[in-house]
Image (cartoon, rainbow, N blue to C red; front, top):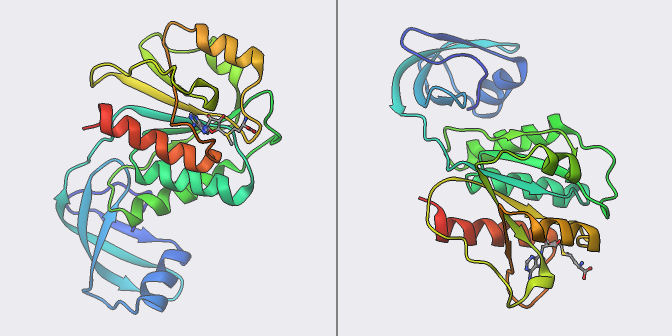
Length: 231
Ligand code: SAM
């Protein structure tokens, strides 16, 4: 279970109404029952139910069962598409260990805004489901040109473009900070392609000769990256 509260020896963790409903109404846990907790900062903890009510409750931390496992320093940048597919990308990025998820507005992106809180909740659920102890941060929608203007010098960019078949640049040796960029349904504009292709920190990458849907491309790109550079 994901909680906001700090976890540690002697910590008592108050539950929200929704968490109490889930643990005591749906899962039927009673006082003394074990619950695995994480908050994205303090690793995984075994806790026991100390108080169980309809509208709330308290869990007492017992012992740490796993340390915080930091994912590789990988960002996933993607142009938001239809709601369900955007949810899918966020969920899979969190499962595959992205450290930060950034929705990006490109020339051919239709979305004007994203529901950051909803996407963040998907990232929490995905981290819960795959037993991660870390929750990636979902950033606000940002324009691609602004993002590139403020680009940190020490981060390399795996720029995925279906127009690059046979022209990929190798990713090089493992380690370092990375970002993966996936375009929208309409792909990148010529101006974006020219700009991205000329960046010294960009590694243009093809994911094969077929044009993949953006959500498929996001998963494929993270797999390629993990295989080449992940731990
Ligand atoms: N412009 C394309 C079109 O309409 O023909 C489609 C773009 S594709 C649906 C969405 C994004 O997925 C692309 O911008 C790219 O980042 C990524 N992508 C899809 N297939 C790819 C491939 N074979 N290699 C690299 N990237 C790919």
